[in-house]
Image 1: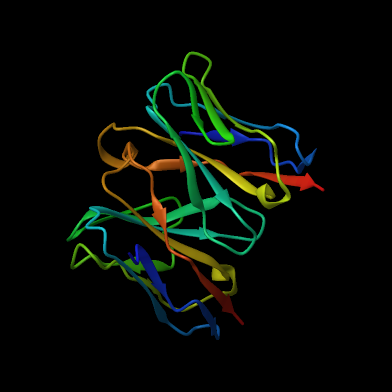
Image 2: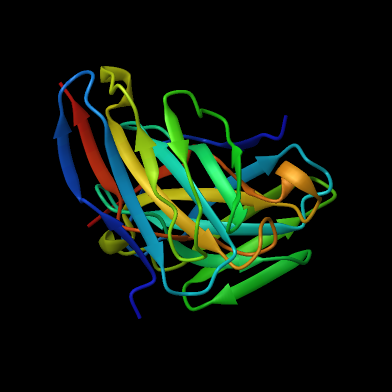
Length: 114
Length: 113
């Protein structure tokens, strides 16, 4: 059974600091990795995709992937109170059958303190 | 650019009633999904579909049914509603499964009393 693990938090950081969110996964053949942001009472919103080892930057967000160690992380630089949300890690595979879907972690709740 | 549209946004049902949650997407995505999210918890996959006429069970399918007669629509049917089905239901779609991100609707908040 595929598993995606995240620390549930809550993770609190002061405004302007770097927030670091981590995710580990169990399926070695996983090939696609996504970070979603979910505000309270809202639906998940895609913020980052990463497919290759290394770093991928988009504005204040950086996704880091290490397939050998089976972890993916999300860094948020210059954190703002508006970044306060739950962050979901999702892992996918292009294997056939029921494996062709994403497995979601349970999310890490981030609070950015003004 | 509507994306994934879910109706209704809120609904209260009595125990034993039935209802259909509607989901439609205008992105011509092949894959569609239904999830439930209980308070403070992650997403649990109920059913998914890889194309019109093809559906399959996810992690928590009991008490639900789906159909996929067109590429655009993927309704979720609750038969004999139970308090345990009180949750927020999200519909999502993706171009293909596993290697592409899923795009979510705004959700349906359902209470069974």
